Length: 519
Image 1 (cartoon, rainbow, N blue to C red):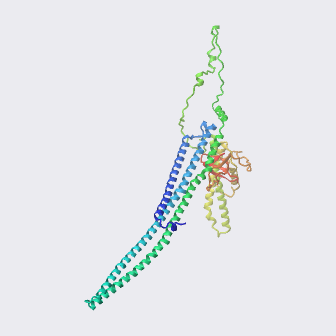
Image 2 (tube, rainbow, N blue to C red; image 1 turned 90 degrees about the vertical axis):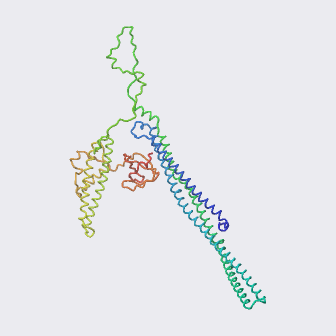
Image 3 (cartoon, rainbow, N blue to C red; image 1 turned 60 degrees about the horizontal axis):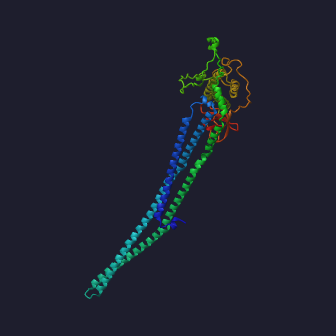
C-alpha cells in the first residue's frame, strides 16, 4: 500500500502528518539536549563534591588509617564515575542531537521541495483548466453568433424586399461566423484533450510520485528516530562496564578497611611509654612523722585527674615555612625523596646518553660506508654531526658521573641499565672522541664505588593494577594498554603523573597514572 495510490486525494492530511513527524523529531532532540544538560550538571556537582571532601595531602597523619584512605579512594572512584556521566552527555550530544539536527534540516528541506512540486503541478492543472474554460466560452459565443448570422441570412433570403447584394452579404457574414465558430470548436476540443491528458498525468503520475516520495521521507524519518531511541539506551550501556568498575572499586575500598590495624596505628601514634602513677602513701601526722623532704617529692611524677582529662588544642593551620631554593643535587629534599629524584635524574640522563651513543655509532657506520663508496656521499659532510654528537656524549657523561656521585653519597644504588651504559661507554671509548670527564675519572669516583650487579635478576613488580581506559602510547617511552588489561607496576607515580608498568608480554613503558586503578 502506498500513499500515492491509496491517499491520492489526502494532500492536506499528508501535509499535517509529515509536519507532525518532523515536529516529533525536533522535540526528541530538545529532550536529549535537556538530558545531556542534566548529566553535565550532575557530573559537575559530583566533581565539586569529591573536591570538597578530598584531603589535600597524603602526608597527613590521618591517611595512615585505612578507613580514612578508603574514603579518599571512594572519592576517586566517584570522580571517575562523574567522568562517565560526562561521556554519556558527550556521546548523546554527538550521536543523537548533532546527527538528528542535521537529518531534520535535510528532511524539512526535502519535504518543502515535494510539497512545492505538488502545488506547482496543481497550479499547472488549474491553469490548463482555465484555458479550457476560456476556449469553451469562446466556442459558445462564436457558435451563438454563427447561428444568429445564419438566421439573418435566411431571413434576408426569404425577404422579397432584400436585394441580391444584401442576401450575398448576409450569407458571407454567416459563413464567416460559422468558420470562426468551427475554429473555436477545434480549439476547444484541443484544449479539452490537453486538459484531460494533464489531469490524467496529474492524478496518476505526478501526485502519486510526490506522495510516495513523502511516504519514503516519513519512513526514513521514523527509521532515524528509531536508531536515535536505541542510541539513548546504548550510550548508557557503553559506560556501564566502567561504572561497574567504579562501583567495584568502592567495594574494594570498603574491604580494605581494617579496624584492628587502625587501632594499632592510633596506639603507635600516641603511645607515650609512661606508666600510671603509684598509689599515694598515707602520711600519719599523729605519730609526729616528718613529712617527706621536698628533695624526694620533687622527682616524683605528678599526675592530676584534671590533667588526665585535659585536651590540648591544636591549630588546624600549618605554620608558614619558607621553602628553601631547589639545589642541583636535591639536598634540599629529605633523604628518601632526594634518592628518588637523583635516581630519576640518573635514569633520564642515561636514556639520553644511550640515544646519543646509538646516533654516534650510526654516524660512524655511515661514514665508513661513504669512505668505501664515495658515490653514496661525502664522509666529510658527517663530521659536524659526529663532532656535535661527541660533545653531547661528553656533556651527558659528565652529568651522569656527577649525579651518580651524589646518588652514591645519598645511599642509592645504580640501576642495571646504568651499569650497562657504563660498560658500553668503556667499551666504545676508543672509537668516540669524548669532550668531558669519563666515568672512570678518578677525580669523580672514589675507590670501590663500582659494584657487581646480576643483570639476569628480574625486576620485582611493586604490585598489580588494571587499566581504566585505553591508551595509545605513541610518544617515546610510553606503552600502549587496553581498557581492563591487567598490568604490573614497576615504578609508582613520582609526582609527575606517570607510572612505569609492564604488560603480560614483557613490554614496559610509562602510562598516565590517572588511567590506572591499583588492585
